Amino acid sequence: MQKRMRLKDAAKEFSKLGASKGGEARALSLTPEERSAIARNAVMKRWEKTIDEKRKIPKVEYGSPDRPLIIGGEKIPCYVLDDGTRILRERSVATALGRKGGGAHWQKKKSAEKSALLPEYLSLKNLDPYITEDMRESLLNPITYRLKSGSIAQGIPAKLLTDICNIWLTAREKGALTKSQLITAYKAELLMRGFAQVGIIALVDEVTGYQEARTKHALQEILEKFIAKELRPWIKTFPDDFYKEIFRLNNWEFKTSSVKRPGVIGTWTNDIVYNRLAPGVRDELHRLAERDEKGRAKHKLFQRLTEGTGHPKLREHLAAVTALMKAATNWKDFKHLLQRALPAYGSNLQIPYQD
Image (cartoon, rainbow, N blue to C red):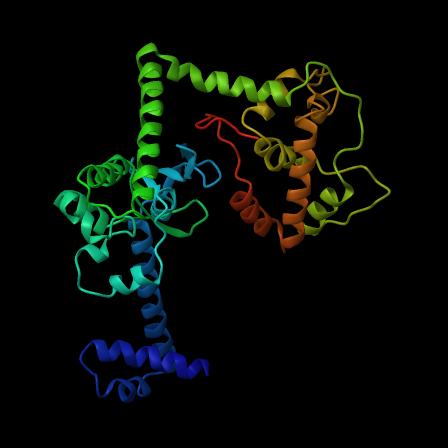
């Protein structure tokens, strides 16, 4: 079977060179090694083409699905791509406006109508007169981007949202909307009011210079929730399964009777636990840790976590991490799952942490 596949690949390559009728015959005249080399080169070319196509797709640099933009009570995932483009998830814009596309919309998509190719929230004929050609061009070509998880999604430039809302408000002002469509116009109005509130706050922050201090204040609020002023009594916090799974994933022998563990586990714990618990928590815990003459901490880091927030969040995180370990087959597999499900917080806090 494998030999037949190599022969087939080699024949295809000869066909591309003009031997459409005699490709397989010529492939049969080659040695197995020559056929394998031709087939291997063909696979490599296809792989390189796929890689090149992936490289052309912009990637999310900032933003997370669980930290959406909240305007007028609506949640809209937003991202900044590696080329600096600010985008909004296209489907979420439709949801915010209450215009989810149904079967009728997708039937229109198959037609030749120009307006039918627009997103569901603007694909109505009575909105056509209020859509500029530049805006139409942008909406007909949504931005394809790659999420941090690796999946592909589509979005629209964030700056278009005000224009989209204005189309609905203008159509309402001109009396061009049906009674059922007035609901969407009302939602657009709520979004516009939200823009005004967010906009004035951003302007004040920029003029006063508070935007630079805002992150520091947000970080301080997080640390006050997570870090206790005094040491809490030591209680067993890290479950045995946490260490058992680390040993299993690294093919180490785990002895229940022994508390000795490789020193690298401490470094790993900083990464897979404290780096991912909340922004700035790891650095603050290490800063507050009392140390002996050899630089070793005199107490466990988790003894500095607050009773109300820090300690419960740690237990939740350990349960999630242990579950990911159990789902993994090796340490590399686990780290991949961990980064996808519980990415580490960067040294610079971009968006305030939310409970």
